[in-house]
Length: 158
Image (cartoon, rainbow, N blue to C red; front, side, top):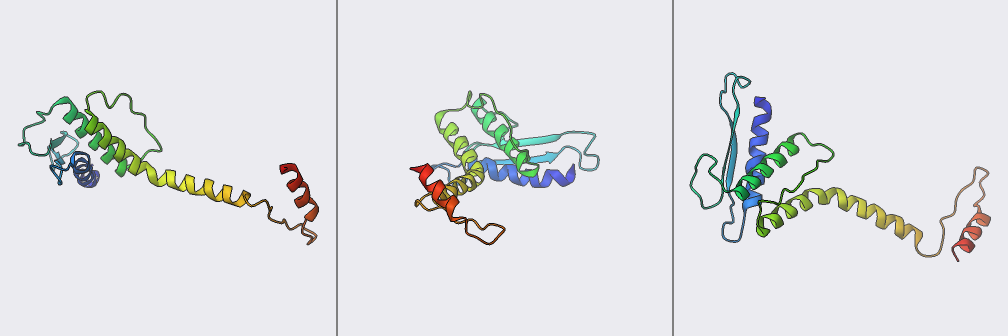
């Protein structure tokens, strides 16, 4: 457990900062995880503290929207440590104002964008290969080009 706490704690702080950063507060908030018992971590729990920007530290005395952002930061941090192929979130925007909804959406889009960009690139490459009216010649096992097949495919497209 101690090996997983440190990277998740670093990730939760980075993600929470990103989710709470604004034009007014360029740094964002602070969040961290600590073990309640470092010597015997399995005997007690893990404390999660989150401080929104421009607020003094108080033991999780956050508004519901602030708690939601803090919970999402923790979820995304755990996911960054041990990713799953997908997860379903239902009504996570219920306690969030429009600004925080936009921040969460932007965060998810940026993280999901890498995979989506690869898919878009592959689709574009496939389409580019089909455009131009010419079909790439296929080599047969006997060494011929297969020109007859090329002409038939050309006619089918017309």
